[in-house]
Image (cartoon, rainbow, N blue to C red; front, top):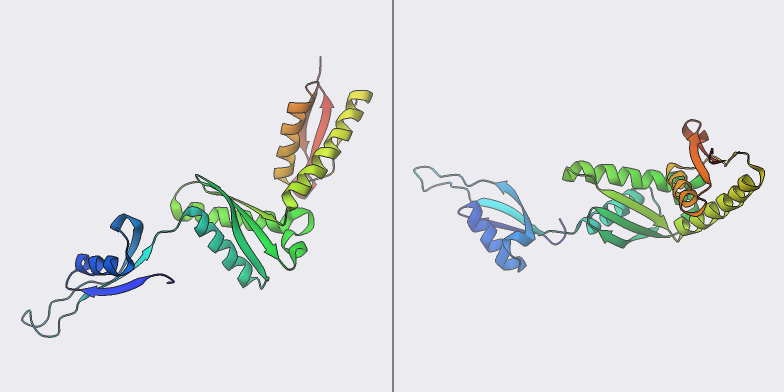
Length: 210
C-alpha cells in the first residue's frame, strides 16, 4: 500500500512502535494491519518468528472517496482526473475532469448518477454509516440546474396564467427534488407532485386548490 511501512518486532506493539518512528506519525494518526503474530521457537529459542505489521497514515473520507472514484474510472478506461470539490462531514463532493466527459455524464446524467450512487453505497457499507458522494463533471450539475429551473419557471408561469396543471419532461430523482424545492420557494400559489414510474417519472406543476 502506498505510503505504508512494514516492520517486524518481538511483539506486535514493538513492531508498531518501530513503524511509527519510521513513518513519523502518532498512533491515532495511522491504521495498522497485523500481518503475522509472533511465534515462540523450539524451547523458546530456535526457529522463533517475529511479529510483522503494516502501518499506513489515515486518510480523510474525502480522499478515500476521491481515490475510489479514480479507481472506478481507471478501470472503465476513462482518461480522467478526480479532485475533491468539497467535504462536509459525511457529504463529499467530487469533480471529474478529462476526456470523454460526455460518456461519463451519460444520457440525462444517468452514468454520472450511477457513479455517485455506487461510491456512496461502497463507502456507507465500509464505514457503517450513511456517506453521500456527489459527483460533478466539468460543471455539468450547475448547467443542468440552470436549464431545469428555467424550464420550471416557464411552465410555472403558464400554470399560473391558465390555471391548469402541466407535466414536465421525465427527469432524474435529483432533478425532481430540485424542481419541488424551487417551485415551493418561488411560486407559493402552486404545488408539485411526481407521477409515472422509473425513467418515465416526471414532475407535475399545478395550482393550489382553494
